[in-house]
Length: 378
Ligand code: F6P
Image 1 (spheres, protein in one colour):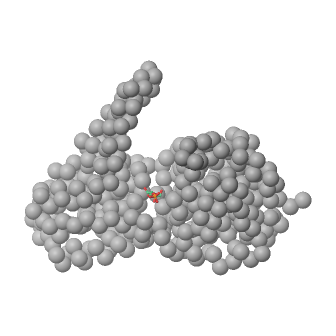
Image 2 (tube, rainbow, N blue to C red):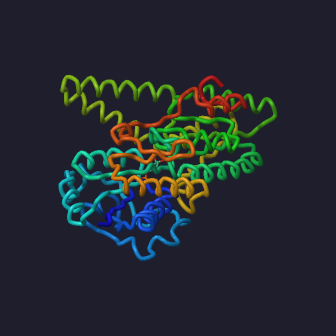
């Protein structure tokens, strides 16, 4: 009997999602005779049993379209807001999986989705995932789809900012997405020739950044591009965050709820203030260097539009291998990109395994060798 598979997309949307849905769906239908069902809006659609039949030509013409034809959400199966209250909906998901006679559930998403998929695996569902996010921060895969497209968009933006920064003799501080990982800022910063690149993984010294910009002025370059990852922090803020995280861990160890609440509140306040970080940094650099400074926040532009050729290829490759694995009844894994191959890796090893930029990464070394200031020892 033919297999029936469900597909959902969860977390932030990302270019290449439709290519991945098409890859697994078309290979599933065409090669293995599977029936393919989509769930709307991530895990919420699975809870509410909102389905869409992905047979009969629905998967044609979607390869080049950005976003996700299924819709997405950041809902978690075990902590879903229902009527204003956080509830564990995993039993409802199991019920809907059975009602739809599914043999497998394909979840396309980033780090959060890998954790959510593991929760469903532990509930006995045949789950299989693919790594999607512009942040490129999922462990055990060389790369995630969406990253290459966002990298191209952010690089193009930095290219464009160069001519205006140069003409006005200004500093332009450009904020790049990436959550707590610096891959996008580092990649686009290097490819776009940023003069300063600030990453969450390497807390920066404001004085070091200002002095690198002032040195450029002395050598006749009276403009600078500062590519800052949205999660970047000064040395002082990073120290404060680390201290509060330690306080939370200590309070949890001795079950001191009051101390935990207080430290959590302080941490939240710092995180809320981080929203203004780029504006603040631009102002500080203007004061310290005497150069006019302007902030630019690229935001969701980086997630929108047509996927790059590399992302279409990656998503198609992972998608078709995903169909092969389902046909082989190989579940509980993420289909990871490894060199020019796609390989299954156990969800237990992927969930919570965030891939950050290591201090000795080849991109970091190259950035330093071409004279880029990384905010530490410039
Ligand atoms: O994970 C992708 C991402 O774009 C991050 O880079 C960013 O921090 C986050 O999503 C933004 O989330 P939202 O679209 O929910 O505001």
